[in-house]
Amino acid sequence: MPKQVDENDVAVVAKTRRIAAFDIIRGFFLIVILIDHIELYPSFFDLFTGRGRLFVSAAEGFFFMSGLLVGMVYRRKLSQGMRFIFKKMWGRAIQLYLASVMLTLLFTYWAVAAGHTEIKEGLPAVINWGYIIKETFLMRYGFGWADFLDRFAILMFMAPLVFWLIAKRLWWLMLVISFGMWWFRGNGFTWSWQLLFNSAMLIGYYYDEIRAKLNSFKPQTKTIIRRSIFTVSAITFTFSYAVVFLLSFLNQHYDSLTPWLRHLTFTWNNYNADIWVYAQKWTLGPLRLVLFFFWFATLFYLVQKYQSNITSRTYGVIELLGRNSLFVYIAHAFIVFGFQLFIPYQTNILQNFVITAAALLVLIIVTVFYRPICSDWAENHSLRWSSLIAKSKAQLAI
Image (cartoon, rainbow, N blue to C red; front, side):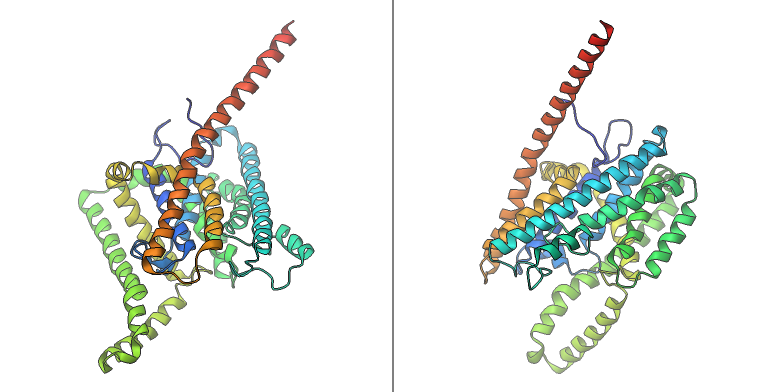
């Protein structure tokens, strides 16, 4: 059975070989996103995800990977011309926009019909369907756990211009424009996160050149760079991890702490508050942006180094999820929504673990069944059109 490859697939190293590390990383980010959206704490999965409260989250990684792969994949299609690339990118933007509209309206109706209007923040207090439909089409209203799709639609609509600047070696101008939009972002999410997406597109476009340049460094230089990145990542990750778990624990038991521990907790809280001024998630604070590149570089190195071991120990499940990222992202929205309808108001740590594990299992199962069905449909669809074309040529020949 032939393998289907489209824009959602990761780029290839040679002509047919995929970069497995990218699939694994995307799969990892999607797993963390689902766990954080189920949002049942405490559980064993807390240690795995940091409850989505670390200085960098999987959401940034998902955005970055999307931009990275757009740059890599569409560079391979440059030979077909910029008109083709504009058409394909805008076609994908329209698909994402329509998917966002349909899912928002579906999840809104589902929440209202089920009588669970409190299931997720963002639902209007008074349901006015005319207003909701209008705001949804204008991308000023989103609901459900697939609400990033409209942001991706905007970024994909902008992507051809960004890609054109990069292809024309005007990447510096693209960075100036993108950084300027981020600098004057205000509270705008899309204007903030476009910097991450566009810079990732640039890195993806020049991925081979960047890789070749790094490989050309002397071993001692590469060791210094690697150790520096690892050190910064280890220190900042450990501190962020301690904030989520240790500082939270100290705050919960503040009244029973000894005086010196109270002073430590009070000082730590103030210091942490100052850090979060520059690590905001919604507007992509500068510290968050810088730390993302350190953490991602470390993650990519480790995954690439141990990817065979990761794939064998996970039976290829994480890689499978990463290969089908758009489907998995949409499927996770339905799974989270469905589970949220039936999660008890109060749960214990064991129930939290079981429910979250069940949600992950459902996601894996639907993805396992989706890929063969999608491939079979694509193959049959291709054969059907090939047959029609052949018949048309035969008739013309007659």
